[in-house]
Image (cartoon, rainbow, N blue to C red; front, side):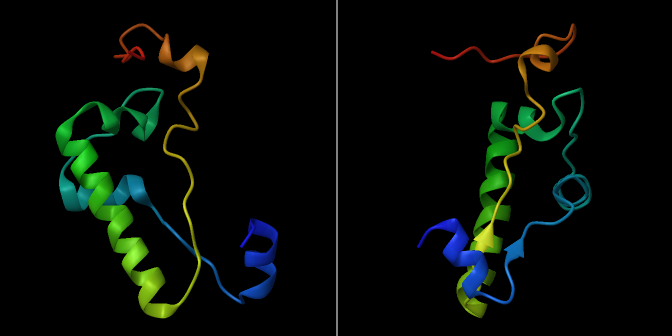
Length: 93
């Protein structure tokens, strides 16, 4: 099913909400710097946290038969921001 069909054929669409707050309060991780949550993929604890959150949302989506739309955590990780002094940048291999 394409995106347009999905949004026109379902009265509700599940989306993640306040991920930054959940990451801070439930998992005690910091999202810092100009790239916000994008730096979470650099550490095992961040990757594990993100996997846990996405699996939770996917489970709710399946349970209630709702489509799930996730936004990218790297939307703030553009060229200018990842090269800001003090930011840790992982170069592609």
